[in-house]
Picture 1 (cartoon, rainbow, N blue to C red):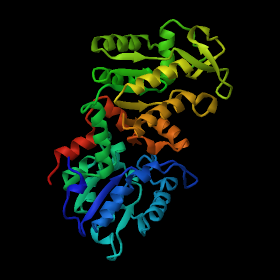
Picture 2 (cartoon, one colour; picture 1 turned 180 degrees about the horizontal axis):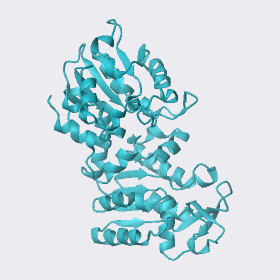
Picture 3 (spheres, one colour; picture 1 turned 90 degrees about the horizontal axis):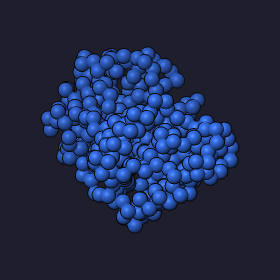
Picture 4 (cartoon, rainbow, N blue to C red; picture 1 turned 120 degrees about the vertical axis):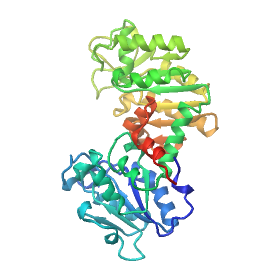
Length: 397
């Protein structure tokens, strides 16, 4: 898989650039621009090389129909400001567009096609649709790692028709994930949260042979606390998870990977309440576990101190209520402290974790922050992502 930065002649070449600009929109206003901000370097690089850029992306799930509320216009307007470039949004049916329709003057550098998921052929990975897309450009670039677990026409089938490269952001994303899954600098620790242990079981099983420590926090930890014979009251839990937990502990013993879970917690009567420290044997039936306690924070900070590599996916508690955000804040502060002194390589992923770090303006204090959701998790499970496989297979450069 080659990066577009390795192509020596892009002058006046038309680049079909697949991005993930699927940002949250409320009344046509973007509420989080992280995904847009991350692909700016690729766009600036292509502009500097005097390339002609054709952006394709999606927003939401229009299910193959035109949905005006899911237009890319607000994103197009945001990019105009960030790049100080005139960007034309083309709403004409892609099947009726030809290459000569796209750039009307030498001054035009960037055009954006309307939401690619307005076309049912996109999610069906339709070859004819991909071939039509390919007639618009000279080169295809995938800079949408977060969509690369989807076998869609603008991700997979398109690579059969054009010379293909990874974008700068996708290349960085894969490189960062390699460093925590195959090019590992040990000791390596994974801090993993989320509500359901069943959704993360394959990730945990894939990481246990490679990692020294797996720290389980959030709703997932409640299942372990209960499995160990404690009352968890009204806490979030998953039914029938005992066999999964037993499997995790059994595999961890075989592979000499330490499983760490809370030894004390912060409880509340409801999500909006105040917090109180409780030992695991003190939780009443009317209480909810909503964060990790001070003893657990201390244990986690000590493990971070002894680690050379950290993967963090999932907050430690219900951070939306500041009373239950302390565990996540202390984890973030410790990783950042070790990052600043170059003691650690840190990768953070998952929507909730990124959202939490954004809320505290801490997102730039980690070695790599992944905005990918499903693709990030599937890569950690050890799956080969269709979009990455297609780039490698069809590299004709």
